Every structure is written in structure tokens, then in C-alpha cells.
Image 1 (cartoon, rainbow, N blue to C red):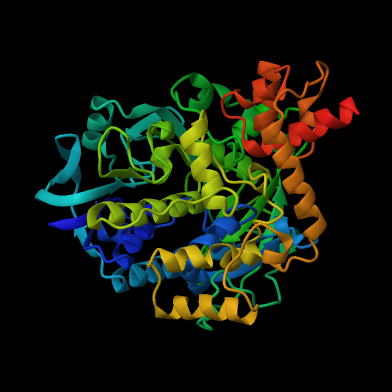
Image 2: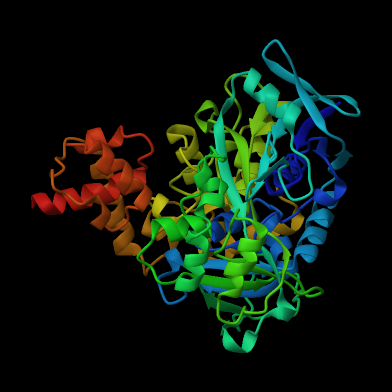
Length: 558
């Protein structure tokens, strides 16, 4: 009998399993293959703007991702370094094999038991999860986390070739997907994709714009073990009109446009064929050439995910300056998979239909390693709470990006893969990547989910600042730089909550409002709300968008 079972050993699953174990649960981690633990399915990077904030928050709760990223970092870059601290984002390029090795070591050290088998069906008695049927037999449990990533009844597309699978050369979770549909949890299908992998030895690096690693030795984790892998430079290439012509001529062979793919893909990470169609006036798109390893020549061309036929992929890649003789080691492809409406979940990520069943990661309609890992942390902490009768752990959007994400998902739902951005947070000036311990350290200690080293680091952090807690006031944050902005932000949000009768001008251009994303502007433009109250009821419009809309409408009325 396990206290907690976790299905899937990707980023969400590893964090969920380790988090539950840190709270004292006996945990089993179910995976198709042991080599799948900590696998980086797509891009070999961790962090970024918004995403890096999530990783730093995970780290406060003794999560695994930041430490694994530091152990594997072969390129470090602080994004938006020239801008304010609130929108700076730590990002590392990782050696895939080093990252997986680090994650396996960290999961093993947490006491999690790895179970290599296929999950067949949930066992539910009296509306509560009691076990899991697997290829190897029945496994009993008190709580269960599904973290299947893109594997739930998934299909892979390359041109007109379609096969079952959630990742290259790996099977799809068909039986479990069927049960999820049968019990009414399935919402529909979403799509993601990956670019071809290139042989770096066939790239003319001298003709490309180099992007060196940062000189200063910052780390993702607040606990620095001093390990520093050698650093590699990335490079920037660019598509051109010839590239676009090749892609346009093959639109009829793209499963995106032929109708083969039903699911909607991520708005903020579109395929190259989607970029060429949607931005027909652009004469080029940047490509970031990112080395994947210290020990092999594989290069990840970030910005050209595609599901076009293999020969088309090779042709358009060779049309790019510096890549005229490039060889493709593995072609790109698209993946379509089942997801669950996250509005069926509570703020602990437990399903409302089945007690003790938690969901984390791409099954909830998100995209990205960091979003998955953060959900895994929340689901794992709360699955342990369910199994062991402990206090639940809830994340507040006022104090964390994890709280922003969970709140957005469980209240608004998704119509496309959800990606974390700083624009989603109405309190983003206070939610910085560099103050995560100040914001969340006390909550992590109260959850009893951190080890001795982390506990000491959190306590030393507060002692060094002469305080024992953190709050939203400028005094509580020692944020002298941001103090007046934080005060204004608080006044604005209080006004938003207190006065929903504010009129919205009929000719207001939502796209021109600072702080409103393209996604939000599209929702508002379609609904054309007349008041802030009506805007608050538009599906998918976030509190951050409402705050920005209030400021814009008030200024127009003044």
C-alpha cells in the first residue's frame, strides 16, 4: 500500500513524487521506462521570463528543478537584464544527459520507489481513489497524481504520417486516456510540437551571431553546490523569404492545415509554418541554435518547431544562412493529446469528481517544463496531505506565480495551452525571481516539506534581513526601489475590486493597453464589454488584465 502513487516521471511527476515524499508519504512513481525519469522531451532549457520565476518558487519548497538545472547548465543567461528586476528571467541551457542524471539522483534520494510498468486504469470505490491497475497488477494507494504529460491517448504527426505516441519512439497511454474520457474528465485535445535536431558539426558557426553565456556565476537554486559544467555559446540564425517560400509551397502537406490535427497549439510558441501563415508580412524569424550536450553534436533550433514532411524540413533549414550544409539527425513533429478541463479541479489540484485524485502538468492544459513542475509540487504536497491527514497547501496569486497559474487554470480554464508570463500577474512588481525566499519561505517551513539544508537557508535568509515573515507592504519587502510603485499597484487593485461600474469606452483599443497580452485583447475585443463588471465575466480574462483595463479606462474618462 502506497500513500501516494504518481503516474508519469516527467517534470510534473518527479516534482509531485518528491514533494509527497518530503511530507512523509510512501510514494510510488509509475513510468513506462526507467530512462524516462527527468527526460527533457522538447527544448533543452529551463527558465525564462515568468518561467524562471516558477523555478525559483519551486526551489523555496525544496523542489528539484532548480538544483537539476544548475547541475546541467551549459549556458546561463539572465533575460531582460537591462530592464527592472520584476521582469528579469533566469534561464539555463541544459545538457540533457546531465539534467536527467541529476533528476534521477534527486528523485532517488527523496525515497521515492520507481515502478516500471504501464498504468491501465484507476480503481475508484465510493467516489474515492483506492488504487491503480497496471500491466504488472493492482497497486493500492490512498491518493494518486496523474502527470502523463503529452502521452494521454496521443498521436504524432510528420507530414501525412500519423502514429500513436506521446514522444518519439514511445507509446501512448491509450487505455488510461479511454478511462479519463469514460468518467467525464476529458475536455478535448491540444497540440504541441518540436523542431528537428541538427548536427552541429554541419553548421557554419562563423557566419552566425554568437550568444555567449553570462559571465557572472548566478544559480537557479538558492543552495549552490559549487558545481559548474563547462559553458557553451549559442548562436542566432534567421529565416528568409526563400525559407518562407519553401514552407508556403508545402502548406498542403502540413497536418496543421490539412485538418488532421484537431487540437489547438500554444499561441506563444507557434510552429514555423504557423508563423509564416500568420505573419505573412515578416521577412524573417529568429532561430536560436542551442547545443544540447557537452558530449554530442546535437543542436536544438529554437523557433522552428514543425510537422512538415522530413524532406521539406531539410530543404527549409538549408535555405538559412550558415545552415546551407546542415544535416538533420531527427526530424521535428507535432503531438496531439487529451487534456482535462482544469476548472474541474480545486485549488489543491484535486478533482472534484473523485476524492484523492490529483492532476498536474500538461493534462491540465498547460505547456512547458516549468509550468508542469510547479503543478507537480502543488499536487504532490496536497496528495500527501490527503493521504496522511495533513494541512493542505494553497498558493496565493498575491504572493506567487504558482498561485497565479493555479488560480487562472481552475477559475478560467483554457482554450489553448497555457504558458506563464509576467503579464498574467497583477502583483508582478512584488513577485520577482530574486525575492522568492522572502515571499514563500515561511509557507515552505509551515508545510514541513523541506530538508535540513533548505530549512537553514530560509532561516538564515530572514535572520540576515532582521525579519521573520514577508507581506505585501513595502516595509515587509525591504523593496525601497519599488515602494511607491507597490503602493500605487495596491491602490489600483483595491479600486478594481471596489468599483466594477467603471465604463469602458466603446472605441477603446484593447491591443494598445500596456500590460494586456494579445490573448486577453482578443477575448476582450470579441466580447466588447461596456463596464469593468462585464469584462470580469469574460471567460479567460485574468485579474492582471482587469487591472490594466481599469487604469486605461480611468485615464480615458479623466
